[in-house]
Structure formats: structure tokens, C-alpha cells
Length: 152
Image (cartoon, rainbow, N blue to C red; front, side, top):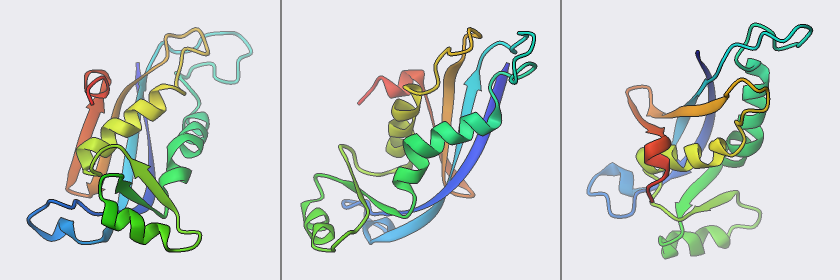
């Protein structure tokens, strides 16, 4: 069985070598869909009986691990030294340094890597993260799965 939970957050970024508008500082209303797979829990008396995982728990783990960290932050490739220096000059600025250029594809892969650590088989129902879909805009998104997360 597969379940999916969607959350949204706002963040800024830039793609330094892009030949178009994305080379400029800008932001997005990102949406992330977290798809988990597992068996439906059948344990008598379990509050998660009939579920793969309680959607509120999916949300809580995603917020703690990723959404609250990235929300209203500037997602910056650490190799973008001019921008990193500028953001470091702003007292208390919320900056997330990344080892990759913050494209939708790379952000989806990083999100998968971060979230894969927290969605584990804690119920004995073979729970695991299957896919992260990251929307940069309502019409543009990237999907990352297990094979993608092992690269880079």
C-alpha cells in the first residue's frame, strides 16, 4: 500500500550558471509530496490500525526534518561564494548551505536523503520512503526515489 502526504513551504534560491531568469535571487512556494509504502497495520488496539502510518505523524517527521528547516530560508549552493558571503553579512539570516546547486532535481534528491532516515519500519509493517516529489511551481516538479538518492 502507498500513502502520500503533501506539505508546502516558501524558500529562495538561485541557479548561478543559469542562462535565464533563475540566475537571479528569487523564491518559490514549494510543495513536497512524501510517498511511503508499507503494509496496513492490523495490530489490535493500535491507534494506527488500518493505516500504513498516521498522516499526522508523516507530517510531524517531515516538518521537523525538512520543512521547518527549509521554510523561509535561502537554499544556497556552498560553491556560490559571492552569495554565501552576502548572506553571511545579514545578521540572523536563515540560510541553508547545500553541497549541490539548488535545482528542483537536486532539492528533491536531498529531501529524499534526509527523509529516508526518518521513515523506517517502526511499526513492523515494512514502512519505507518510496518517493519525494518536489514542486517548484504548480507546473514544474522533480521526483526522487531510492535509485536517485544513492547518486550524488
